[in-house]
Image 1 (spheres, helix red, strand yellow):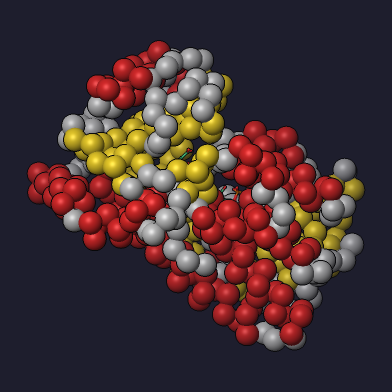
Image 2 (cartoon, helix red, strand yellow):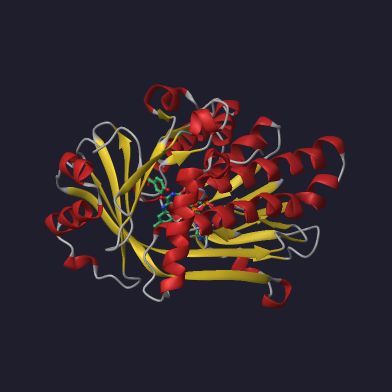
Length: 390
Ligand code: FAS
Ligand code: PHB
């Protein structure tokens, strides 16, 4: 087979890139290891920045988002039994975020791709990258039991943190930056009404908790847990009891319990690979970077990378200019590192670190106290949370 751009991965990054390239008349083939059902079964992000909403509107996939997405003008931080509302709208001249699950974003993008008759190879096995240091790269894989070779001009590695793309780059060509946090998040999805119309980020001496949602009838809750937490030891009852212990009494009293329809432990890490281009191979999304979910940046960063890469490839094919693809890595990393900083900062502020000295614990308290006292501090938080400009 032949295509202009071979996209590895049908997560949000690969699907947004594929849709943007199609819009620009650039031929792209998406190659995905899992089935579409498996990809849709992964429960992940829940908050879209305004920039991500704009990308979906540009792609014409905003119908369900507009009908079902929940615009949020603020959220609460609970700290040391005090509560502070971050009024996003007033702190950012009217910007908001939209609560709409990554599953729904992926569903809408998959449906649009199929409706446009664009090709996606699902359940592709043994995907391998070849000759991406040259101008004639290719991908091989096995699909429906048949060996396949896809010749292309460029490869977009949108295959997530554990994908094959970054793993195919010689270690000597990569500089990696990583911070692994000494805890994870235990998440539960349940068809119960949220305990609050807005998100609550709770810092508590027992550990962090987050009250989020997917709709007004479906809640998403997280509690900080051990990095190697044994999921089987967490009954629904034990989870909700622990969640309520970490919330202020009013919010705890409003928590409606119900059977978990999904329960999982996610590790937390900050990670960036540099650079993001190796000849004809570009890395984007979780293949290039990971943020702890505290700042709700992972999904949004992935969509931002896809936006930049699509723009670069559009310049290459449309204007015969290599400026965009030559600048993609530096341009994307500029925004990636700011999201890494914000996600690290929110995580450092709100989580319980067993290794913390008394001084570091006081630093967390002083940080929160400054947020309470300084509008400028709250503006800085809000500006990052709603999303830095693309
Ligand atoms: P993805 O990982 O979503 O997609 C990569 C795709 O590539 C997958 O479909 C995979 O099957 C495929 N692939 C992998 N290897 C392949 C190969 N060899 N060949 C072909 N295909 C291959 N972000 C938030 O903002 N908030 C959250 O609460 C949040 N929670 C998360 C919980 C978990 C458990 C995880 C893992 C991530 C979470 N994230 C969260 C981050 C998450 O949303 C990512 O940022 C987002 O999925 C990134 O999208 P992609 O870059 O498309 O990567
Ligand atoms: C979620 O709803 O899954 C969610 C929301 C905000 C975060 C992280 C996760 O910061």
